[in-house]
Length: 400
Image (cartoon, rainbow, N blue to C red; front, side):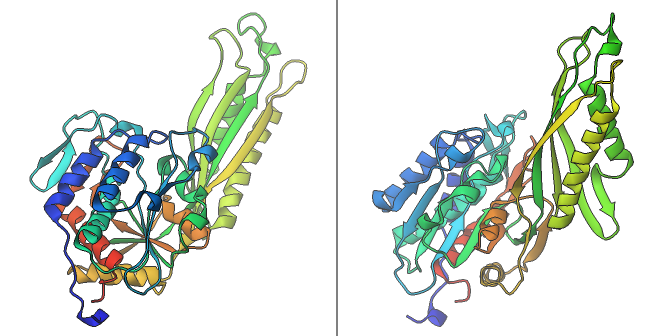
């Protein structure tokens, strides 16, 4: 049967909603993805995937938090000719989602426990892909060579996408990441970010008897942060045509109320779509903290010290609308009767690392909203659209 006469398959949407509800209830914060990986594996095996086709990498060994398991990679041979396609969705959730009890009311699913998030970020994306795979297998639908990729630890630094061995993926030519937003959302770009660790060492002394002998690490931190804020290098940053953000997110330090603080540890970040400007923001942060340390001295002239380490969390990217994966995703969205909405994010996605590593990747929404909060919800209609799009993409019927 020629491509132009193939019928567009439709998924069992009732089964898909049941599946995503089950998946959102499974505990799986970053580093604890063992149960959700086993759930996905069991579903695929029951649908007919041989054990030899399901692999797990060692991404957790590269993670600063360790972890129970690596990412799942499933490779299926094609039943028709065409370039290999890969659909991917991370399986970890943020801590606020632990204890989620998904409850449906009308067209929306929320957590029945008002103190938890839902976990639709990103179980809805993983469920859309899993639904498509099960439909293909159970109905023997024709499809090109396929790779299903379920990365771990996206929420703590895109670990799965960053460290998966590309040899496991089978050289996919078209890659589709399912994540946040509505079903017609196509993310074609994202910002880049540095993760920064600042360790400030001062000099301890008795704060009541000999405060003049101390060098306060807290004072150094305060002066540096205040200067960054005053000079426009903290928060939203606009310098001429250049834009970015920075944030001091965590501060730990001090030892006792009556001791001049000898040590402070700060965790911060710097973001920008422009890699050169992002580096300039990083340099400004480093220079400001070092200058503050040099200017805080005790009675004998001794000053504090600053040690800064940073790493690139993810690189920025921007895809042309003419890139094959974007064209295919756009066609799939339009085949569902809606117009795609193109977005460039000020956040990071697994697509950042996939694209940076040489595989252009477009991200498609799967109905999740208000992620990382107790107000998180899944729009069922949008999730169902994500499932329909996923099935079109795995079967190559987006333009049928």
